[in-house]
Length: 216
Image (tube, rainbow, N blue to C red; front, side):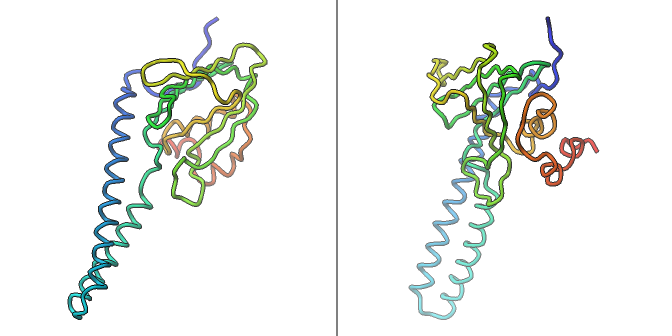
């Protein structure tokens, strides 16, 4: 019997590999900018200590302060180290298919077919490599037990070779923040399977479903 799709992301025409590649390039550019600013700031600091002349010392002091401020700004706005990833979600009435792609793990592609009866809990954490003190809900952990016999999880490397499952019964997905990847777990997942996070807290921080997706 064909089941009705409850949630589907992304659109079929989305080029996932190209999207991941662009994310990785953006992250590398951001990292390069931070390294350059840090290096120039250190040079200015060294020159500030070296020159005893009042005018030159003042100039390099100002440049050092500006460089340090720019470094902090870039570092704070920098995306997490795990930005080269993408999560495809197709949720039906009794099961969900996750396809997770990442450029920073040995397992480039993780496919998980989960029967809702086998999902025991879902919890959030900070994005891997996040420089924020407060959780950005950028990482999700799913505990499952294959009691139904219908749940299947497989991992593949970039060449399509199947890899052994190291941690049975747990899945970890990094989420692109402020996208339907997060939106699914914020507003749809609780209608389909057990969760163990405070949805009221999420609504207070991120707004309701319409505001999250920009439909209000």
